[in-house]
Image 1 (cartoon, helix red, strand yellow):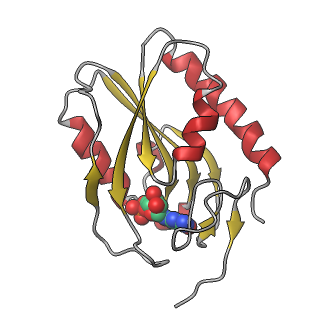
Image 2 (cartoon, rainbow, N blue to C red):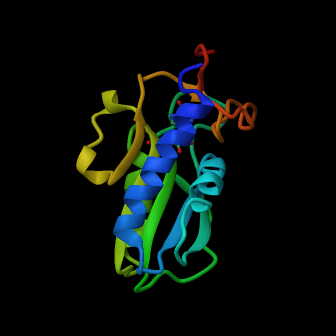
Image 3 (tube, rainbow, N blue to C red):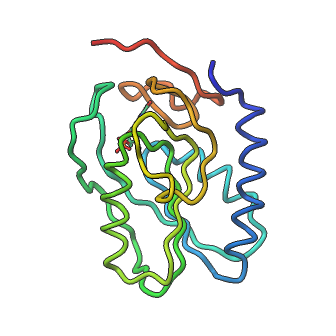
Length: 169
Ligand code: 5GP
């Protein structure tokens, strides 16, 4: 186990407080990146006490593997227009930053009023500019992790904590 259920929940309390200060009165759209962020979105949104809407976008990454394929594919788009809305993108994990780069470009051209990014996890070894991420839950070592929405070959998403698994070739 890398990060316990308690640690995750306490950190989400803090993130929700910080983000509430920034987005209260902005009627934001929370955009969850499927599938990995679904647990994070569910826990995070229940801590907000101001109006917001929730949408999801799905991109493909790491199919059945622990190494990146280098490609990002949009598999499911948002259900609603986000023009002139304040957006909060909720990511499970930022590794190489490729997915984030793709999503920022894809959302940016839709003319939102603003776009903020919050990732529960971040692997700092991979040189993603920190300035591109507005809120980070935890920085973790450059290892493959599962749990709390994150999978290995579709499994382990249900774990309430984050665990590290050994790489399997
Ligand atoms: P990036 O495009 O930043 O390299 O990768 C982002 C996506 O890769 C995440 O949304 C996630 O789906 C997947 N990913 C990156 N690192 C991990 C990891 O350690 N474990 C799991 N399960 N997925 C990961």
